[in-house]
Image (cartoon, rainbow, N blue to C red):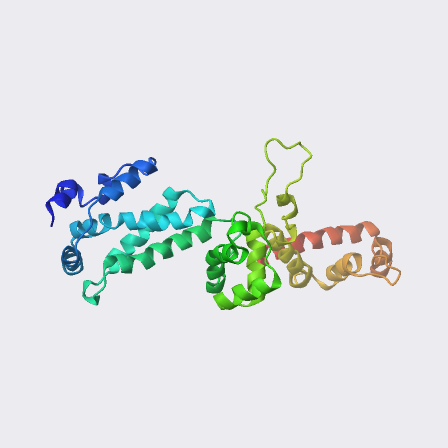
Length: 309
């Protein structure tokens, strides 16, 4: 190991990040990273073998530290998506650590080549998760479009229009050219173009809006699919079918007929079933007695429904 490297990091190799300034001061962090010395091929191979064979965390720390400048370099490629570079660097560092953990020194490649894939992959995922609340790319083809459409539009529109290319609509011929170059369908290019050109809209009104302002979130509510509403509807449907049938079975024949005639029958003219007086005349009892039987039957049915539920 070189004397320069050991003098700079020997005391903190088990915690690589302690040798660096806080990410809150991004310029100081980047300067510190760029001052970290690189490893020779022999040093890299030796450290990778120590990590693989012995689980040496000190070796892992040295490998990570020596490649942090690569993460900073890659992160600059994604600053155009409006996300903080510090966040991009942190995500890239996660990819670097994954690469160090999986790196095999016997494959004959340098860690820088192997780690590049992992760093970009981690940053890609972060950009896709955070660039928009509504995800603009979910399939592999859409992700390829997302990360290449802007640069391709720049090249198609020419240097003179470079500043406006990100907002310009592609012509039919340009759509075909992009689709051919990226090996996707023209309609997929048009769909991604629409997603990228659409601005974000706040779901809720700003604090400066008037009391009568209506935000898009007001149109998103669907009470018919609200969980408690769905459960209530299901329970009501059950009570109107299986539940009622079960409760009626708990009644004697007279009580059951009175309930059915009073509550479950509908006449041809749209009216209800038999009246208290009609039932009283049929059974040879008073209307008040029919009402008492009805009340008792309904109480018994409610108990039966509760037990069955």
